[in-house]
Length: 113
Length: 458
Image 1: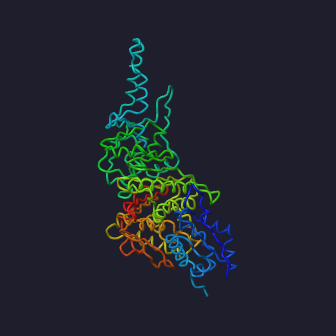
Image 2 (image 1 turned 90 degrees about the vertical axis):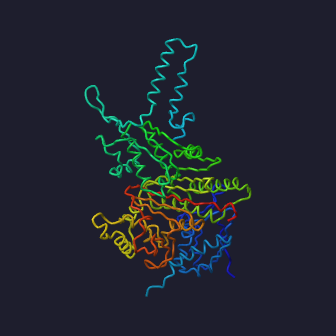
Image 3 (image 1 turned 135 degrees about the vertical axis):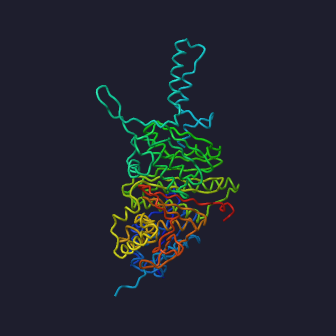
């Protein structure tokens, strides 16, 4: 069974001053800090934990920035969902699902012959 | 509020400046004063009163040249900050007060606050008033009058307040208020748009901040995130007081809507408006109407200007040109007078569609910010109203024309075309995409979200 790496998004919140995670570049920088793409290429699995008491909102731009390179590589929502498990309340699960669907529409195109 | 410093409780329909009040006390005649002292105090007091007297019917022009001993010299003209001067100069033909010194100005400015004076209802009127205010301040000595008719729209009045503070930095500036009810005065007197401030009373709560944009580190820019938290904390507290429910918490959906509006707006300032050093953020909760208004704006590049400068992939650029051609096409009615829409209007509307961004060449996942926060606001409450103003374009969004998924420009994307078919290749409804004729040199977003059901567990 693949080892799961836990990413706690609460660590990206500057408590007690803020309770939101936002910014496309911030998402890209966090993905870069985690070497996310290299680890995805090695087929590592991840659990993204969202503590709803600490995090009140996550901007769509952060999610897109965070997963941009991953989707560019894996090309589909199904492939990403196999490597990334989202653990959080129903609102955040739907939010990630929505953004994965949008990224799937962008990157899940047949390869040009 | 700018007006709060000048408002005298003793006389609602006119006022004396606070500086004059101070001097009045200073020159009070006492029993112990001798005749010379009495005479001096009386003269000084009369001098102050003459200076403070409002000549609101006078249209005396501020002279810009004066006779020196040997030759004419120039007075300093009233000059505002760089961005406001640009706002003035780009709208010279719009203001009736910009016609200098030819007796064409018949009266000083009278501003009526009613339902029509609102960024959502009539953005053209609000923007024209702002230009008029600035030119009035430049040219006419007399002070404008502000008359309450039946309504004060927060976003519009906030902008007026902000400009008044800017004007007051450069000249003596006095606004005479008439017919204001106590409740509205309470709201106005607490807007201190010139400084970062927080206010909370029985009628409203407000947070106002000038947010500095940091470009060195993506982890910076915590300021707007902290203010976003302050705004939602303010709302929770207000709703707890109203509903007497100490355990009340805003839903994640409400947090998402409010913070998405703020976060995406500042993300766009950071990414697209490279010369902007700051943005203005104001969150206002009206406890009577149970509505939150978010106003975010910055001076700098406009949305269409950023597109004119950008390097966009050919297939998107071709599609954009096709949309512009359709939107700007003249028909037999307006052939002589120009089309209903300009290329700038079309570009601004295109910019809010999913996946249309000046950065799309480098990152296909760009161009979602604006439509994300529109979707959040409308899903929280379908009666939300949003207006986006940039350049000469104002785009109004409410539940009349919903967002829907369309297959355009190579893929499925969320579109809000503001016409009955939601077809971006058809012209939009001219009541929702408005060519204001007034150039706003920057981007302004006002979102009004009713929260009338949140206290009931919804």
